[in-house]
Length: 475
Image 1: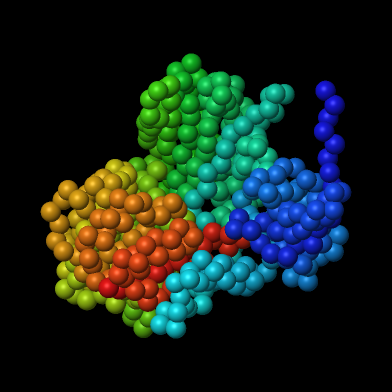
Image 2: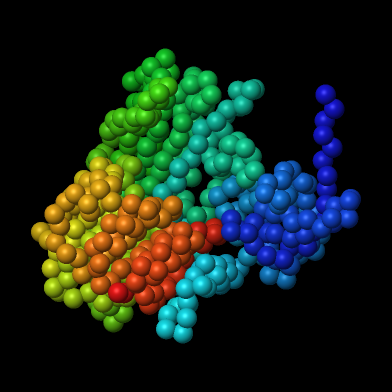
């Protein structure tokens, strides 16, 4: 079969896509001017790219050469940049990254903003490097049995690259990765192959308490019994990590887990955890302010292996502090903390209000939320486990004064919005990691009688296009 000839084009990049890729235009042989999206380029670049695909009328290009650099382009920090799919913006100075994200949020909300809506400048991250407290790495191998452990390649169709450095995390993450890679190469274990349901090793999750120094490593493996790990393999896995990344401080711990992912045709995926070493959780601290001029209050949180916690601890404290400041809570308020996760936001406010009702669908995160309430000596925080719309419909709960929302990236579903509107709460503090779906939800709330008061973008994820945003609404 004749191999399809690759087309190379030249394009000037004029804007960013939602994903953070450069977008420009090129003239095809037919004379038609078409749009092309090229990873790792920025506005002002003139580039040569290979055309690799087309979707919804937009071509996708692979960067071959920057013919002329944008005046804003800088040297990326990481040697893996433009191969790894983890970062998008290392070639752009951080202050310009943040400004672009602020513009992005403004564009999402442009139809909702008028002279009565306050849109604050973005809150930048104190440090654009070494901020992530959690990473998930993938195991993979090729037909020649070469082994790979790291992150998914950009435009690699699921291919994994061996990672030797990452500037988004504490350096010990890479030390753990290297120790596990050496352990893997000295074993007879294979990476898991999804299509064949063969092999053992799926992912390696590394996380930490940045203010406590606690460390956690979790190995996720196949549930196929033909590829189960033996006791000696688990012992050597634990030994490799203890020798490489055990905290030097006696006040910090290393927790190690095995997670078994069981799949069967026609059944939901099941997970089983095995505690291999250390505590069954790690601790993190957040220093929270209720108001701009208030003193910081240290709060302690327990994090289980798979429970959600904001990936940037330092900026999470700023995010929550700003949300609480904008909410202007009073001591008589009844607050709902919906999609509460491990309870961080609701627990931060509980000591300043009458009561907080948390709702979280994850049983593990709900358990953490209850544990965290005890950690912080709170008796006015109660957590229900279940779907938000179902809990609001079925439980006899006190009438809320304030709703705090922090849903998944997909935003609020129709059933949740219906129940939220039925509550008729005077105030809503809506935090989102996806301002696009947040703006869509806010539009529905505004159409139902709420007024958008404030928008506050917060950058938690430098070098990437991800951003958090706070929207305050009142009746």
